[in-house]
Image (cartoon, rainbow, N blue to C red; front, top):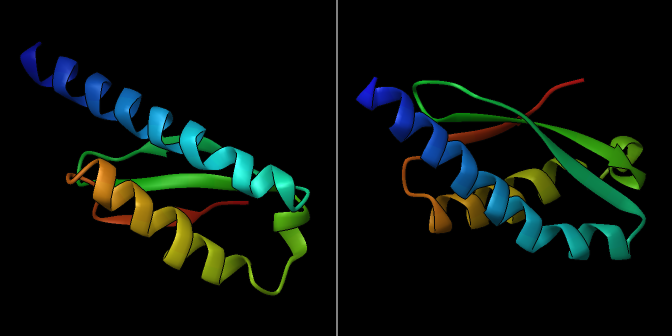
Length: 83
């Protein structure tokens, strides 16, 4: 059971970090939603609004969202977008 608390805490910290960067995405007409966090630190997100079809979305995902989440939650290994 102890492991579950750690996972829940990590997911909660990731959600808090996403909430911190959300206004930046919303300012450009986009948004991001946390879908899942795997046991090995892969964060799955769904890009919404203007982010979905934007040619820069991969850059936003890797250089923006992933970089920030790794800084705030060191357990994060990678951030991937899911449809």
